[in-house]
Length: 367
Image 1 (cartoon, rainbow, N blue to C red):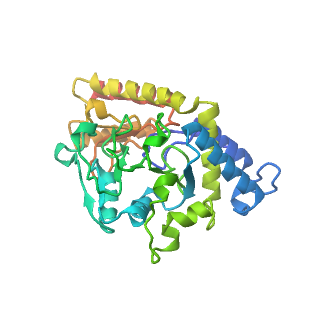
Image 2 (cartoon, one colour):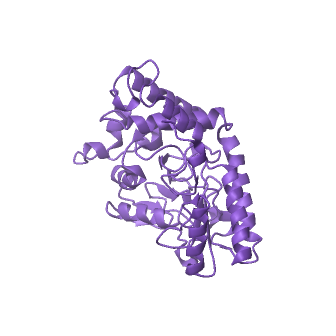
Image 3 (tube, helix red, strand yellow):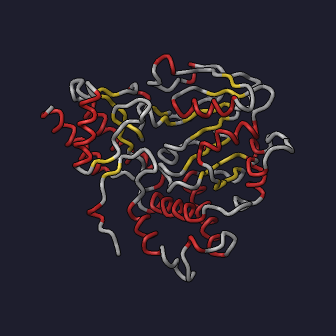
């Protein structure tokens, strides 16, 4: 049975999040039997010809869309960004420690895992300011002896984002881009490593993308006691196929990338789309005469996660309940901070933001 698209809500969830409808429909069409394969993608060997072709095609499309140089490795791993919080320091954090910018909830989690491995320096923290902005390049100074500088490019809970490729001041730059991967053009050569859990902007939960320069990879610390699966070496040498890969999740990433490249004009096209959506929603907040109070400073406002408060928690609860009844789902802020959060990732439609803005205006009139 084919599900009618009229039954779909506007999904503002922070993740797992909305996926492009064309990608879902193609997966639905081929779910039972992949063309000329006689079986579903979920049923075929990860070492077979069909899956090998899907993985290679997905990697090639990602390299093309993002402009990934040949001297960078692309990996499809498991465990989400949370496992990368551990893998990065286990493989690279040396005697000089590592520098971590404390930008919000997710960078704090990454720091906590790194501290289990070695020394962590914090050149800049937004904690005292309530994590309302990202730092400028002149706001911090790195430790020259550090193994790398780690950033989180978009903090989903606080709704703040880097809108540039930060200056790492000579250190290898490692970036958790889970919630804004492929949302804007960037210069890959500025990064030693980018990792991203797929379930927000690139595909379903179950696969984690890692893009790593060969130069940084060559700095992997020797450790015979390091568990095999926690070393990047085994994954690079086996092209992400040391163990059974999350084949269906990778297949879905491929369909999302196909939509991004062929229907949205790549990262430059989706960037314009994201700017248009975010501008409409922030305008509704700014023109509400203080009824809706945005969290982030204007220069650091996220294109992916828009966060705001109302005058009371009771009013926020009413807002969320009435919005849900209108098919505007997933607007409850993270449990650690409360408030309202609208996640408008790449695949979120402009029409959904229009519907939310219309509801916001109506709610303000009535309450």
